[in-house]
Length: 78
Image (cartoon, rainbow, N blue to C red):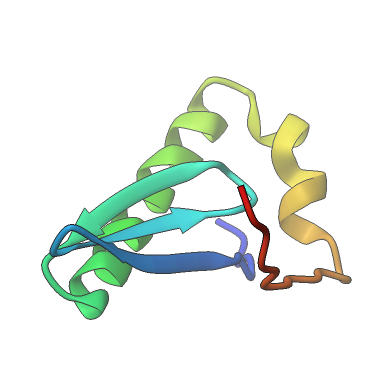
């Protein structure tokens, strides 16, 4: 299996840390940021194995292999 550099965001929500992979739109959670990161890693691994098994990996690979990735934190008022 190939290695990918993926973007994961983690935030606290009502005492639970939520983790989300931006490229795959996969999410998980944990009681600590470290646990949330471990859990999202497992969720990503399962997602990629299923995508490969069902022949979907080629469809999502461009977002996984992009060399230029940009993240930004912005503030909005609603």
